[in-house]
Image (tube, rainbow, N blue to C red; front, side):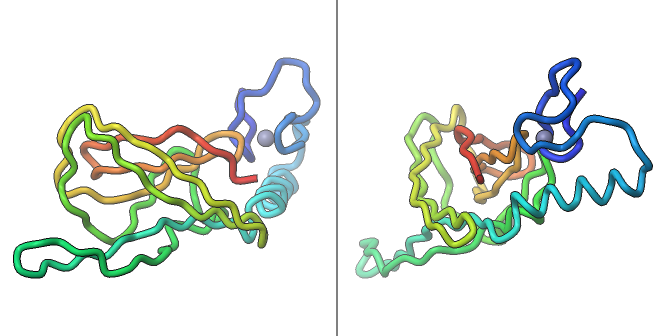
Length: 159
Ligand SMILES: [Zn+2]
């Protein structure tokens, strides 16, 4: 059985989830739904993930960097487990086997953490987008690609 709040697999006989503390006891559906929502908000409110996007310009056939800015990928509380939320931006094609690095800013209730994730695509991916996917235990992964073909980064914690 999985925790209804954070999605972690629950150990048999445990009275509560050891990640988010949600009690596994059965109860009135409305009460349970409220407890699940409140627990989720307690962990994920004011938590967001942004990605550093570099802007390039072509000048005389050469690409030059024109600064960068952190663009919000998601507010964690709005994500659904195992559903990818894509950033509404398309990037250049990425080649297979070429290491792809993304600089992230994870805001954990005002505490800012910077993290670089590496993705090594196993195949060529065209029409590349960047997305984010919530995973069990309030972890998440960064995704590059598109709905049909994508690669995920290692998971990292949002709490
Ligand atoms: Zn849980």
